[in-house]
Amino acid sequence: MYILKLGGSILTKKDSSKGEIDSDNLKRLAKEIKESAVTNLVIVHGAGSFGHPPAKKYKIGEKFAPEEYSQKRIGFTLTENEVKRLNMLICEALIDMELPVIAIPPSSVMTSSNKRVNSFNSTLVKKYLEKGYIPVMFGDVVLDDELEMAVISGDQIIQILAKELEATNVILSTDVDGVYNKNPKTHDDAIFFDKFTSLEDLETFEGSTSVDVTGGMVGKIKELLALADIGIDSMIINANKENNIYKALKNEKVKGTIISKR
Ligand code: ADP
Image 1 (cartoon, rainbow, N blue to C red):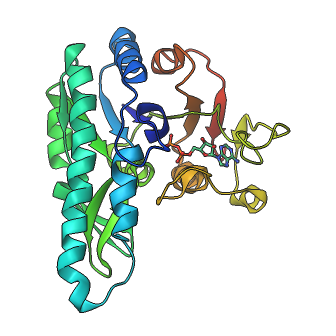
Image 2: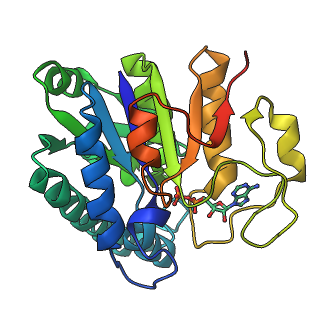
C-alpha cells in the first residue's frame, strides 16, 4: 500500500503569516494523483501556513502554568480549526477529481506522550482502505499525557501509519529535490544525497529555515530512518516539479533521496 505526504511547503504559501493555499499546485497535484490511478493509498498533508502561526502564538507543546490553561485550550482548538480548514480545501480539490477521500483528523484518533504518538486506533483507516476510500490525515494537535497538548507533524504521522499499515511505498514530497548536506535554498554548493542511511550525517545539517514548529527536513529524516530500521524504505521528492508525484505513484524513476538501511 502507498502512503503519500504532500508537504505544507507545496500546498501553502509557507512564509505567509496566515493560512494561504497554493491553489495552482493543489489542482495540479490532485490531477497527478488521479491520473496515476493508484489504489490502496493514504494521503497525509502538512499544516503549512495554516497550522504553524496559531501553534506558535499559543506555544502549543510547551510547558505552561495552570492559570494559562483556558487560553492554551483556545489555542489548541484554533490550531485544529485552521488545519481542518486547509484539509477541507485539499479534500475539495481531490473530490473535484473524483478521488474518494475521507478526512481522519489525528486529534480524533491519536494521543501522545511528550510529543510522540502513544496511541492510535487504525481500525477505521483500515476499514476505509478496504472499501476503496483514500483516507487523508494531516499534521494536527493532539492531547498529550505529559504536556496536556502537543503538535504532531505530518511526518510523524507518516511513520506511525507506515508501520501500522505495513506500507510498501512511502513517498514524501516537499519543495526541494530531497536531502542535501545543507539547506539547498540558502547554499548553492549544497551536495545532494541519492540515498541516506544514517543519523551521523545529520550532525553537519542546518535546520529548516521556514517557520516550522515541527522541525523541517531534519524531523523528516529522523522519522524516515526509524522506518528504515524496520525495513520500510521511503523517498523524498520534489512536488514542485511537474509529474514527479505522478511518476512516483506509477513506480517510475524520479530524482529524490531514498531513505534506506539496505
Ligand atoms: P514541508 O513543509 O514540505 O514538509 P519543510 O519546510 O518542513 O517541508 O522542510 C523542507 C525544507 O527543509 C526545504 O524547503 C529546505 O529549505 C529545508 N532544508 C533544511 N535543510 C535541508 C537539507 N539539508 N536538505 C534539504 N532541505 C533542507
